[in-house]
Amino acid sequence: TLRADDPDGPDRTFVWVLGSTTLAVGLMLVSLLRRALRHDEAIAGAAQRAALLALLAQQLSAAMTEDEVGTIATTLGRMPVGADATSIGVVEGGYLRVSHGDTVPEGYRDAPSPLLPLNAPLGFTAAASTGATLVFEDDAQYRGAFPDAGGPTAGARAMVPLRRTDGSTIGAIAHLWKAPRRLDDTEQATLSTVADLVGQAIERSRLSLAQAEDARHSEDLAQLAQGLAVRTNSDAVMTFLTQGILAPLDAFHAAVGVIDDGELRRHYTPGPIAD
Image (cartoon, rainbow, N blue to C red; front, top):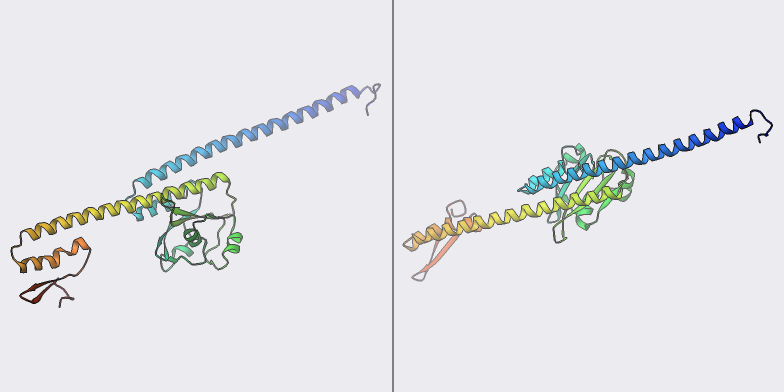
């Protein structure tokens, strides 16, 4: 307590009050500055994410085959979420056909087969078979959920199902980070957006392939009809059919039989089976 008759009292009081006020103002300015920087960083991060998602969508829209989709997804698909490596898997029967990006650890890329059984004890196959999104902050958390998974040690992991537009699951996309990481709500939403874009691209590529196959079959049938129209006897018709019918049916051998005067006459596609 400073006495009024203390010659240094008022000065000391002033200095103490002034110092405290300056410190408080300084701390407030630092807090405001940090908040502004975080806000600027958030805006910059959101803009960068949006640009990377737009690039991914643009490249996927031009993909004509599933292989092209896989290449784009495992390279550009990891960038909007900042992942170090990305793989995709597409369900084929009871298996997951996997495509790895170049940055995926060799312990995964050097697998003897690209096909994983859907019942394999892995987060990747679990996401594809159950349709559930799985996110793990670190390797210990992942090993706790899938103790028999094996494979290289990593940091955070995320496995997101790939879906058609009707909502049915057709596979999964898996992201790896080298270090532990807690994915916030924005990052998890970005994971879902990436998976949606990839799933739709796979569906488009399959539709394009089906349309191309339909067009090819129509052309093959037209050629078959034209060929039959110019054949003038049964032998010529049957001989032509044994080869002309193969392409429309995607077959490799055909046998044509015609009953003539009570006898079955057979014609075969030339080759080992006919022999």
